[in-house]
Length: 464
Image (tube, rainbow, N blue to C red; front, side):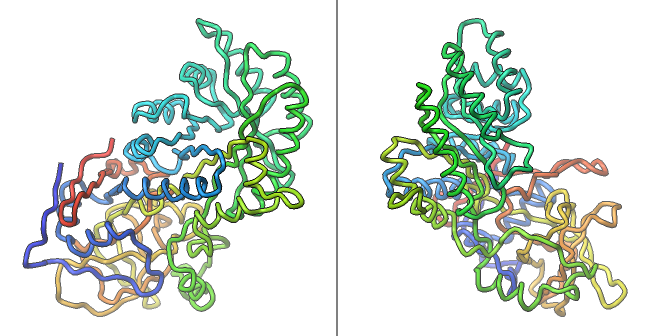
């Protein structure tokens, strides 16, 4: 375990914050970066580059913020952390410490959640491609199983037959909303009603707990509409003698990486081909400067109209329905930073400069999706001596020309040099480890868990 104590009098490193797409930073992390840059360099020297540092306290704060909204509206609720957002075991530990559930999409995520201390009964499996072994493990753990199709219903029935003792499977039925008719996930109305009929005929095998849907995008309005559609199936199920008590609306709660005004200025004034070394502006981005935070989004959803004179929150209370959510990115908001060490810079044609770092776009994956991570990195320079300002894009250490961490030309007030550090803030959500691999036989980036009791007393341990 590594520790950081009070900063020494002499600081051999200097921290340079960007001026354009300046990241929002958790106060604990901000204090550490600004007061302990030498410790950052020591950690990279010890564990390699890129290095991901995970901060579970942020996860627990995000969880409590959402729970506070749900309690304010006095609705029954269940949170399931979307484990696919990040591979950190300490994040699963934070979910267990927060007494919330976990949404798993593989038997490996199931085992990791159980290992972290999450009760099997607080685990929900929503992935559509569950294997027989995965089904059997979920049944044995007493987990909630989201049934994606009639075919999965049959497969789950077969898995029940392999259990040593008679066991019921706890199920949600996944609905495909009218706005997503081309999706391969979920069931339309006809199949869903067929599933309900099957459940009435097999009460010894299944316990229906409710319905589930998941939508792309980040609008609360689309979720409110899908919610209204699902409530019709609540009524149908009750008329059949079933007792559904949950509506799971999936994830997609937005988070804010940069201030909305700064983000809007960038999109309006600076997001043009001349600001990209390849002269290509991506077609789409995550809404990094979201107008809504996750808690504001949830508030608007609960206040949205269900029917004339009745809000969604009031529907949930009057019908005694539990609202379930599967936040991923919004629970790991501000819960990790990724540090890349600079190897060198190189002058290219047309006055372009490329900065090479130890690490690849596999560890900062937006360019793999033909998009960009619209957050400027913090520079930690290894000398106080200023260098001329430059504009440069960031490339990885592989032999692929497309191994680019950002195509966007970033303004640096002082030019980065070998040994300097680039810190990307808020990388826990689908960013730092989604595509990591051992290309060129580089080892996988290390992950450290950071804990802080008081300012100046930080501890770092491997996150397995």
